[in-house]
Length: 369
Image (cartoon, rainbow, N blue to C red; front, side, top):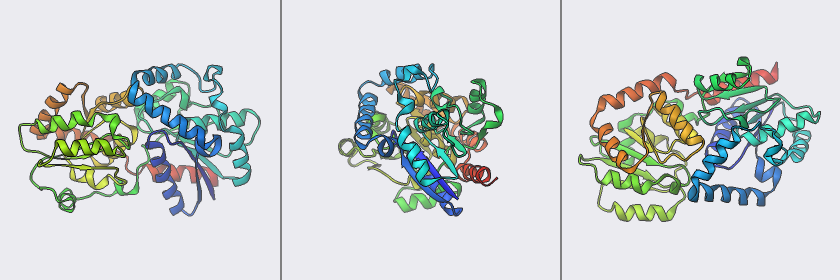
């Protein structure tokens, strides 16, 4: 059984989902190949330049990204106004399919899903194709002709896809793939001891994905240091070493610890009482799996704002948009245990820590049928 997983390195969530799925497929005895669509099928230079441009826009002009995201949602994925993006990498993808002859293809990013559809329109035979949506929203660029199955995060997302014309039996609510470690409960006290933290003080975990500078973590740090009640905190700055140094200087002598990039956030989430983060799809999925209440802050326009809307409507997150709101909401969350208990209760209702195994079983079952 051969499975091809197509991903892309824009944000860390797509690759994290791909690796989580690859591990489950491999454990089931499948031969798995993970391919970065832009790096391996378009060109490495294109991948580097476009990823840097993406990061620059998110950092310097996030409103422009939000506008582009909303405009893209008004276009069909194969629209002529997409300026050839649906065809990017399609010819090399066709050759890859000929070489690997996979029994199933899984896409965790919209562009390779559309490229597969382009090949199908050209008359190419495409193996059963499952696309895994890594955000908590439907967006037209995920909707490509020829996709056999959509795996989505929640019933609300399924309703959106169905409303946009996808047959209900082609949309399965599986959750977003997270690593196997999230399937097993982790003792909070043990996690705190392992990290050298107090078992008695409230613990806030603050992070903003792999690139910490996207998430206004300095604002979060100031809000933490201004809290009236004693608190301890972990601030994860990702690959941004300069930001980590600034926060370390700001918090010297306090109960706030600073981490750089952390490959496995499961122990940190297990130890924490509250997560402060922007609303990336993988971050939400992991927090839900860990039953860790969320306070979203500094979510970027586009998919993160829509993820934030989902989380607040589902009752699993508090939301702060401005710095003053952040401090007030932090105070409220940490002084009202029943509020955090209520968020955890809603998370138990919607969490799907076994999403990777569910998706893999669907794919294998379809390919072997």
